[in-house]
Length: 382
Image 1: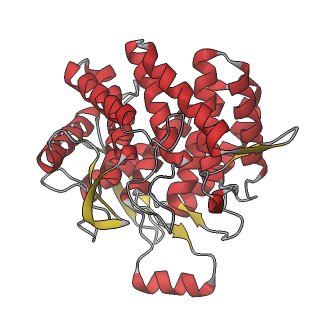
Image 2 (image 1 turned 60 degrees about the vertical axis):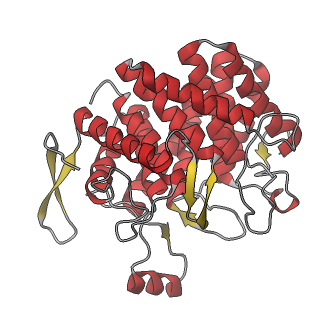
């Protein structure tokens, strides 16, 4: 991609050498988004979520998560450009999602189109459903069409009544899925769910949503490690890039929606921001896949050089650091990461590679980066 409008900023690398990083302008980001949209149209015409996945590389499927994120990105671009084509794209995605919700349940929810780790494809998952629920909220805010808000309410009902929740007087946590093997706390999913309920509360002022968001946020904050990170789950002790980002995204929504939680959430976000940037990213914006937890894994991933962030990890970081820069009033590191990704992962055809040395194109990852870059142009201070 050509980036003629890039600004540059200096930084000192670990060897004490002065380097420069590229900061993309709005024009650069829009050019990148247009190229990605052109690539997608050639790849799957008007089937926004049709494509391959890193876990299913040999067959194309329709991915609800990709529809939700592409639709959400389209709303952001529409609100910035007022180009009706982007609003039409968002509505097409919303209609597809409503018509293809999981028929196993009474309320709206979505999962994966193939079996995942022995779990049949007719199970829904909280992360997928929350991304789509937030998309419906944004579409409602843009169109004022109440059916989209009703869809979001239905997602909330699925989480509580059909997916599952455990709570006590002070805390609550959501099941990742109603599948029996996932009746356990997974922090990033709980945080995304908390953020979703905070968004519903902000737009409806219904107390039940405020209570769900507040109690689940307390669970997330109480399970933060002293260094600012979170484990993916207590059993595995994994600290990885994309799920730290998801956890931060959920907390940012809570910060902006639940006044009583601002002080507690801000304190958690300060610690998370420092860990996320200094442990998982470099000053030029390249990212690590995860933090190796044992000496063996450190040696293995150092020698094989496999510890590189995936595309959706970069996308999540762009969204998370963009939000953090507003809340914490710090420079927007999401722009640094966007500049790195646009220069190193976007191809001449417009699609984004899975990794710098892995020229595979996975539609959920493409949708994540589309939504992330669109988030940047919605900022007024670029």
